[in-house]
Image 1: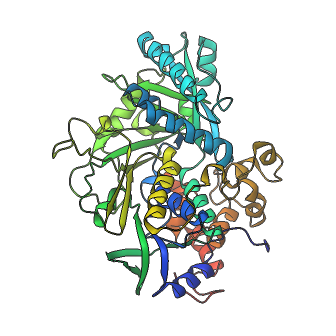
Image 2: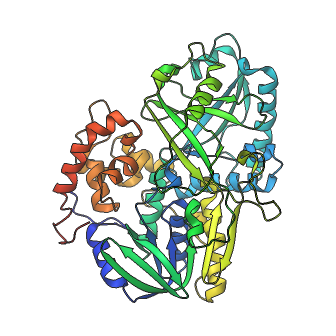
Image 3: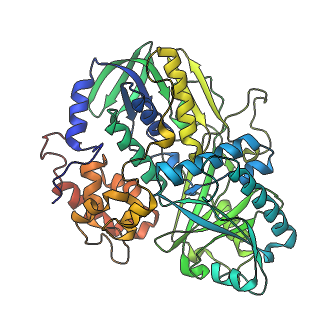
Length: 516
């Protein structure tokens, strides 16, 4: 049993206490949205000394933030579109994540562009990779963070991605990969809580009326007063800011066994036919699976609250694109899971009323826009969440006239973070260290029995999620704190274990006497 407290613990008791204290309270900042942007804003604001409440209607990382490609990238695609500033920002923020903020959650990942995709393709990849290297070297922390771009021979291609058709070489460049995007969001939220932020999941901001923010949490309804409201609701931001012009798009991924590609150790990179800047990636994961992505399809009409699902056309496009370079083509039978998410792309003010020819061509720059006391921050990319949050809180501090003027988050480690030499000395299984960092021993102490035979996730991870990470439901445990739910067959087998852990961890009527 773990008896020591951990920083920023989002326990059932803390949630109940925060809910009881908030009705009629006055705070500096209310953040709406518990994705990577909202959690990043909450941390930046709290670390500057502002009082903060984060409201998330379902769960941390329940929306777009858990459906990414899990990459911390340096912006090669931005260079292809001539957006040098955005590429430098991405490279800088990648260095921050890898070196200071979350070294335990990010690893170096080689990307292979094989010659069998076309020598013109690899020539372009080599040029782009070297330009990306130059951008990386120009930002603080970039030097030494990643190896340089290089050509490789046929033997190296076969070693990195055995499933590629043999006999030719290729180009390798490097980028960053998150072990899990949802874990980054949870770490951000807990670090914000360690600085005093109140983080409430299952709490919906139903309206903002001047300084009053109306909230519903289960059967409870109350209001609190805020100096400023930061709207970080992503594709749902228009509920609080109808004037924002968003053009949502859907990005989809397939989950396949790594053995279907020969258990690759590099990301396979294949251009989408007819495009010079869009690729399908086959991204190897620590659990032995591979994610194929990503598509970019416009979403018509209102974005639903439910999770997105890949269309048949997207599944076909992903398989057909990667099959161009494989010795044994993938089929639908190889797909064991799939996921999709919505991107909150911003339509430029100079554009017309429609989305244009392609959402893929819209910039990933973010937007800051005030509407009375509500500051909306939308767009951007997961990699640049911290820069977006810093800019948003700068605007809030200027408006309120209080709080530290400068952000400290570029050098602020998240819970569990430590320099890599220290992480290597943590006395716990390596897999847990890559997900929990220095807190891995606490997770291991809560139980080592696996949740599902053939998978690595443990009951200790589920218990840790309830006690320290605000998990309240089976979906929280299986779809976000762990990613068992990415494979439906595994999720079905895991549900009884998750239900038992929730009951044993005193949800709904245990230590604190409150229901979920």
